[in-house]
Image (cartoon, rainbow, N blue to C red):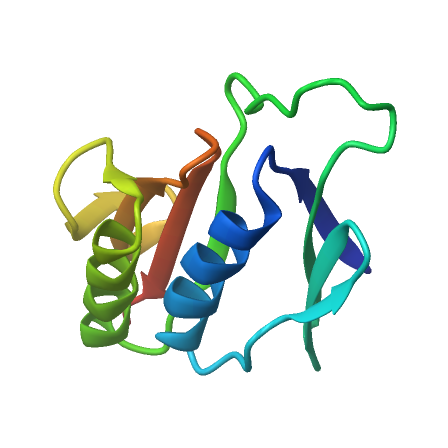
Length: 125
Protein backbone atom coordinates (compact mmCIF):
# COMPACT_ATOMS: atom_id res chain seq x y z
CA UNK A 1 0.00 0.00 0.00
CA UNK A 2 2.74 2.50 0.88
CA UNK A 3 5.85 3.28 -1.14
CA UNK A 4 7.43 5.44 1.56
CA UNK A 5 6.89 7.43 4.73
CA UNK A 6 8.66 10.77 5.26
CA UNK A 7 8.65 12.82 8.44
CA UNK A 8 10.25 16.13 9.29
CA UNK A 9 13.12 17.04 11.57
CA UNK A 10 14.73 20.23 12.77
CA UNK A 11 18.13 18.55 13.23
CA UNK A 12 19.14 16.05 10.54
CA UNK A 13 22.30 14.83 12.32
CA UNK A 14 20.37 14.15 15.54
CA UNK A 15 17.62 12.39 13.59
CA UNK A 16 20.14 10.20 11.75
CA UNK A 17 21.81 9.18 14.99
CA UNK A 18 18.43 8.33 16.57
CA UNK A 19 16.99 6.43 13.59
CA UNK A 20 20.24 4.60 12.81
CA UNK A 21 20.04 3.23 16.37
CA UNK A 22 16.33 2.36 16.57
CA UNK A 23 16.04 0.99 13.05
CA UNK A 24 19.38 -0.78 13.46
CA UNK A 25 17.79 -2.68 16.36
CA UNK A 26 15.27 -3.95 13.78
CA UNK A 27 18.01 -4.99 11.35
CA UNK A 28 17.83 -1.95 9.04
CA UNK A 29 21.10 -0.57 7.66
CA UNK A 30 22.14 3.03 8.49
CA UNK A 31 20.60 5.81 6.42
CA UNK A 32 21.98 7.22 3.24
CA UNK A 33 22.18 11.01 3.27
CA UNK A 34 20.83 13.03 0.33
CA UNK A 35 21.34 16.72 1.10
CA UNK A 36 18.58 17.71 3.54
CA UNK A 37 17.10 14.17 3.79
CA UNK A 38 18.05 10.70 4.99
CA UNK A 39 16.67 7.44 3.61
CA UNK A 40 16.28 3.92 5.02
CA UNK A 41 15.56 1.56 2.14
CA UNK A 42 14.21 -1.95 2.77
CA UNK A 43 12.39 -4.54 0.64
CA UNK A 44 9.21 -3.53 2.51
CA UNK A 45 9.46 0.19 1.69
CA UNK A 46 11.33 3.40 2.41
CA UNK A 47 11.39 5.50 5.57
CA UNK A 48 12.81 9.00 5.26
CA UNK A 49 13.47 11.99 7.49
CA UNK A 50 13.79 15.46 5.98
CA UNK A 51 14.32 19.05 6.93
CA UNK A 52 11.17 20.82 5.65
CA UNK A 53 11.79 22.19 2.16
CA UNK A 54 9.58 25.21 2.86
CA UNK A 55 12.00 26.45 5.52
CA UNK A 56 9.40 26.28 8.30
CA UNK A 57 10.04 24.29 11.50
CA UNK A 58 9.17 20.58 11.49
CA UNK A 59 6.34 19.61 13.84
CA UNK A 60 5.04 16.23 15.02
CA UNK A 61 1.65 15.02 13.78
CA UNK A 62 -0.96 15.29 16.52
CA UNK A 63 -2.69 11.90 16.64
CA UNK A 64 -0.22 10.31 14.23
CA UNK A 65 1.87 7.21 14.93
CA UNK A 66 4.44 5.50 12.72
CA UNK A 67 4.67 1.76 13.37
CA UNK A 68 7.71 -0.41 12.67
CA UNK A 69 7.47 -4.19 12.55
CA UNK A 70 9.49 -6.22 15.04
CA UNK A 71 10.05 -9.96 14.59
CA UNK A 72 10.04 -10.69 18.34
CA UNK A 73 9.13 -8.98 21.60
CA UNK A 74 12.86 -8.95 22.46
CA UNK A 75 13.54 -7.03 19.23
CA UNK A 76 10.82 -4.51 20.15
CA UNK A 77 12.46 -4.09 23.57
CA UNK A 78 15.88 -3.56 21.92
CA UNK A 79 14.29 -0.97 19.61
CA UNK A 80 12.79 0.84 22.61
CA UNK A 81 16.06 0.75 24.56
CA UNK A 82 18.00 2.06 21.54
CA UNK A 83 15.53 4.91 21.21
CA UNK A 84 15.74 5.97 24.84
CA UNK A 85 19.55 5.73 24.74
CA UNK A 86 19.65 7.99 21.66
CA UNK A 87 17.46 10.90 22.72
CA UNK A 88 13.96 9.45 22.44
CA UNK A 89 11.43 9.44 25.24
CA UNK A 90 9.11 6.65 26.23
CA UNK A 91 5.39 7.32 25.90
CA UNK A 92 2.12 5.45 26.30
CA UNK A 93 2.26 2.40 28.57
CA UNK A 94 5.56 0.58 29.11
CA UNK A 95 6.46 -1.95 26.40
CA UNK A 96 4.33 -5.05 26.72
CA UNK A 97 1.51 -7.26 25.50
CA UNK A 98 -1.79 -5.67 24.48
CA UNK A 99 -4.90 -7.60 23.48
CA UNK A 100 -7.78 -6.25 21.46
CA UNK A 101 -9.76 -6.56 18.28
CA UNK A 102 -6.55 -6.89 16.23
CA UNK A 103 -5.35 -9.84 18.33
CA UNK A 104 -2.48 -10.19 20.74
CA UNK A 105 0.42 -7.78 20.08
CA UNK A 106 3.60 -6.70 21.82
CA UNK A 107 3.92 -2.90 21.56
CA UNK A 108 6.64 -0.42 22.51
CA UNK A 109 6.12 3.34 22.06
CA UNK A 110 8.58 6.23 21.81
CA UNK A 111 8.71 9.85 20.78
CA UNK A 112 11.72 10.72 18.64
CA UNK A 113 13.79 13.84 19.45
CA UNK A 114 11.43 15.92 17.23
CA UNK A 115 8.30 14.64 19.03
CA UNK A 116 7.08 12.16 16.39
CA UNK A 117 5.26 9.20 17.96
CA UNK A 118 6.71 5.81 17.00
CA UNK A 119 5.77 2.23 17.77
CA UNK A 120 7.51 -1.14 17.43
CA UNK A 121 4.90 -3.86 16.98
CA UNK A 122 5.30 -7.64 17.18
CA UNK A 123 2.17 -9.60 16.27
CA UNK A 124 1.84 -12.60 18.56
CA UNK A 125 0.03 -15.81 17.65
